[in-house]
Amino acid sequence: MAAARRTAHPLDARLPATQSVAVRAMLLGERLQLRGLSESPQDLGPTVVSAGKAGLVVLFPYGAVVAFNLNKDEERDFLKDFRPRIERPLRKHEVEELNILPAARAVEGVTPDGIALADYTLPRLQLVATVLARSVSLAYHEARVGNAFDMIEPLARDLERHRGAKRLRESLRHIGGALLVQHQMTGRVEVQEKPDLLWERPELERLFLNLENEYELDERDTALNRKLALIGRTAEIASNLLQNRRMLRVEWYIVILILFEIVWNLVEFLLRR
Image (tube, rainbow, N blue to C red; front, side, top):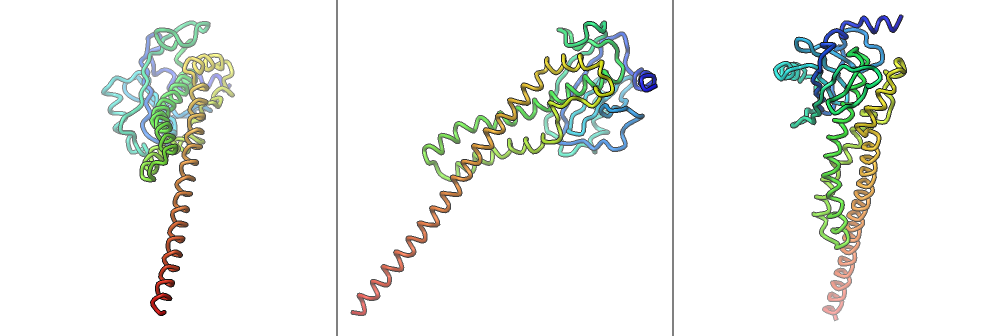
């Protein structure tokens, strides 16, 4: 009965079943407000809405959207209407573009021409969108962390050469932006988690694994977390060093004040004699 309900889903018929369809994945902001957007029950998959003349958009709370079969004008109109739901919009969207194309079930997966699908029913589109949304989110965070990671070597040299606290603080500010990535990704982009949709549609797991491997989601997420861990350790060391320097400076101030007090008392004593 559940399978029959899925095949009758009104959004299934939106895309031209026998043609190649353009797909565009975008990271729009830090978070999307999706309450009240579902047009009909969609089981365990991400939220999907109709858009344009014959298109769909799959929406993810961590800031990504994946548009199917929208031309430039339709995409612009959708994003304009959707903008109030975007929390902290990005100045420049992270984007991935490709095509999906109809193919026999036996050859489903990534091809030189795009992603081949046995049909354009909603569960398959949601699965493709999930992989692409995770990929664009990773790409954005990889760029941010990469910039901070480039600061590690100069920061290490500054620590070795006992450079001034001002330069260390500037480096730590840059690195702090990367550590914010870790906070943003925690509990939002579950890159290495199995999509909920597969619990209901286990026959799609082979397709998901193919897409996941082609986009190297697990490997990229692991590499990103390793960089974040190294950045975090470096920031902790630098922060502790700054703290120790401040404490040492205070200790020297106290020593100087004590010496000044001793000298002052000695001078007074000599003058009285």
